[in-house]
Image (cartoon, rainbow, N blue to C red; front, side, top):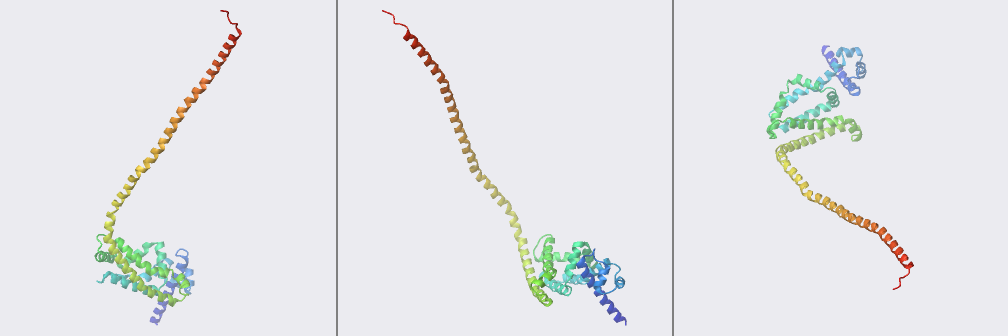
Amino acid sequence: MNARLISKNRMTEKNILLAAKTVFLRKGLDAATMQDIAAEAGISRTLLHYYHRNKGTLFRAILDNAVGEFIPKVAMLVELDIPLMKKIELLVDGYLSLLLDDPLLPHFLILEIQRDPRVLVQLFRDKRGEFVEVARIKKQIGSELRIAGDTDVTLAHIFTSLYGMLMFPFLAKPALDEVFFNNDPAAFRAFMMERKDCIIAMMRTLLKSMTGASAAARPIVSTQPATTQSASTQPASAQPAATTQPATAARKPARAKTKSVDRKPAVRKSASHKPAVRKLTGRNLAIRKSAARKPARAV
């Protein structure tokens, strides 16, 4: 009787968590109510409050149930004395199994990251302390990829690439089902199992490219001043051509000014002589007339 009751309670708890996850994704944490969750689960509100007093504790229970069991498995995997690529292969296999059993988990994690990422960080700390495994994996990255110094950025590239390739298909699952898989759940599952090999191959290529980039990045930086100097010499060679154009343009106005200055005084002189010629002509006529009137003297 007790075993049957315990099994029933576990089924009810699982049903409540699934209903709460569905309602939270549909309405968000702030807009969702306990009545909405009870209606989704098909139970009374009184029974829901018996298991969870409010939606805050229910929300934390969903997170704890979703990632709480997998965090210790990841920590154990990191502690194994195996190559980095082998650890990534095991991570891909483990996460795909988890996500295929709970396709709504990526949606819920993204919702929580947007709302308050500190909740997830605190959950990790509650399960594994102060991230001792992170320091260990960073040391292994520096050793295998031959990266001197801090490897925080390298680890961020690996983390975002791995989890992005794993979780995005589940975030886009409604569109993928409609466009590519004709809403067939078996087709999506087969696609993800096939994608596992693709993810592992792309992660292997990423590690190789990052190993090469760490060694090739230094000469690239040292050649930048040389390119800037060559770029600075180009304006110097272009300066004579630019200075000759204003010089030729400046000569033309000088010629125009000299011609215009020479012509104006010539015009003024000719204009000033004309009245003098006219007056002189009038006097000569008068003298000639008066001389013609006087009689000639006898000799």
